[in-house]
Image (tube, rainbow, N blue to C red; front, side):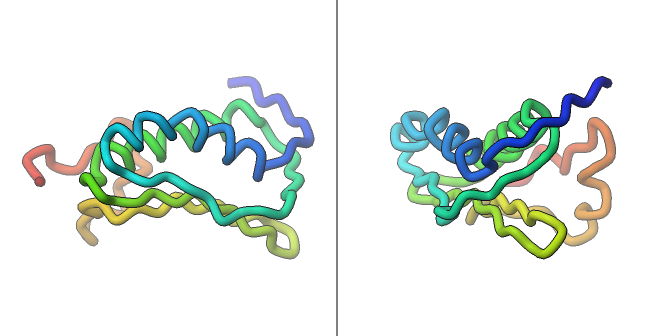
Length: 112
């Protein structure tokens, strides 16, 4: 995998992803938003981070019910940036959390 580093505004990338999902969220009776207002400059692979955000938001959309909310936020720290996708969906059982970054891992499908 080739990584292409460039400087970009993470807050604008977050807004792009929100705009991409806004109509779908509204149709499904969900709210998607960000509280990240100030510019956050980041040097990294913009396309990979976009891909990551889309995967996380897609999962949130699947497991958040009607009337639910999905928040995407970023916070600049001293030498890092904290990125958060938070929803009020069904969640992940505690015993499965260490496994979620294993390739192809999925929590049991019968959960509702």
